[in-house]
Image (cartoon, rainbow, N blue to C red; front, side, top):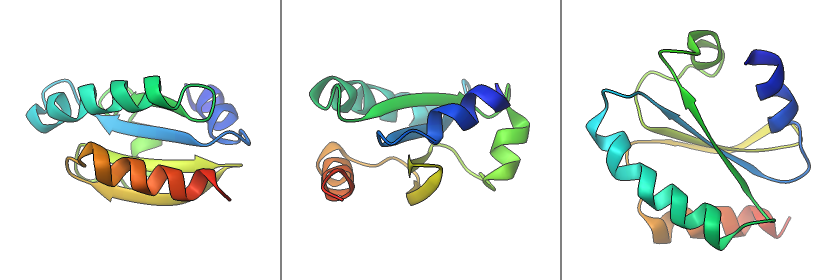
Amino acid sequence: MQGNFNTIINSSTPVLVDFFAEWCAPCKVQSPILVEIARELSGKLKVIKIDIDKNPEIAARFQVRGVPTLALFRNGNMLWRQSGVTDKISLLRVVNTHLQL
C-alpha cells in the first residue's frame, strides 16, 4: 500500500485521507460525512481511507496518534490535518479553501 499511497497523494488533485480504525466509534460517525463530501466534490477531490491497523507504516510516517485523523494532500504536500470528528461544513470550508489554490 505504501507505494500506491505515495502515488495517490502526489496527485495534483487534492486528496483527503481518512486515517481510521475498524474499532473506532468516532470513525464510524466521520465516514458518512466523507461519503457526502466525496460525492459533492467528485472530480475535484479524491477521498481515501487508510486503516491504521492494516497500514501501520503509513500511520507512523504521518505520526497518527488518534483516529479519526483527516489530512489533505496535494502534490505530496500535507496542506491541512485534524484529529477527531470534523463536521461537514467545517470540512467543506477547509477543502474549498485549498481547491482554489
